[in-house]
Image 1: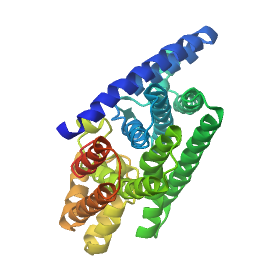
Image 2: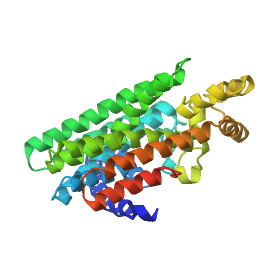
Image 3: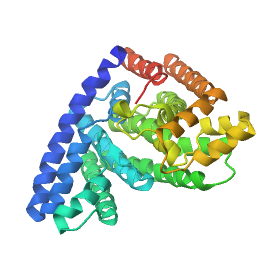
Length: 356
């Protein structure tokens, strides 16, 4: 991780922006309503409990590559992106019944449990989900405000918000695809890859890079194309690696429950690869375990063993490595600051082995 020291530096700077945002937002919310203030305060705790700040780092890299000068404004835009990220994660946890996020209780779980203190009755799942949905909406509103504050030029500010809307819209399409794929009986690799592009590649990589170029006011078509190609390859690789972590990850490092992707019935590229090579008995076990909510640790281990035995894990990791190398080539052959090339290249290298 030494090569990505810049990421830690960016995280600290973005976290300071987030601290300022949540401090102000919580004070304002408490003026109107105690519960609303408590919700905003907890959103701040969650935001600052984890996260690599990858999307802000990509925005800032593209901003630098395009010759952007106003770092303070760019940091505000980076903070806005992180608010959007948390908004989507909170809603995602409601959809997936996730109970842990960044090592903390997910928002819906926290407020389902808080119902006892607030209303004097037991755990209220609907109340918790309702608070999480509204809390996510609040974050999105804050993100738009923050993005508008990032640029004095009204035209650029409006364009940046329009790009932010496009990112969220595309991600929502990918999320709908993801929800549907979990329940579809026949799923193709092509359909899963389309979902990966919409849900991850365009949101995590392409969108932030495009925003950075836009905020810098750079119209270099060649640079934009290179960053787009890098983004799409990295995005697919990132999601495949995420799939591996979703099955083999350690909850202490990921901050999420072990085996959640199995319990949620995620039909990932790795799972599809396993089904292609699996014996009849292995196929039956994969289908029986996918979507099983009360998975035991023994069953998680069984699922992991099938991914290894069928070669699906190895093929998934090989795909990550191939795409990461191709992404690095896109950066290497194009003109941009050495510091940006180094960071984006190091990010591709890190992706191959990331564990959270």
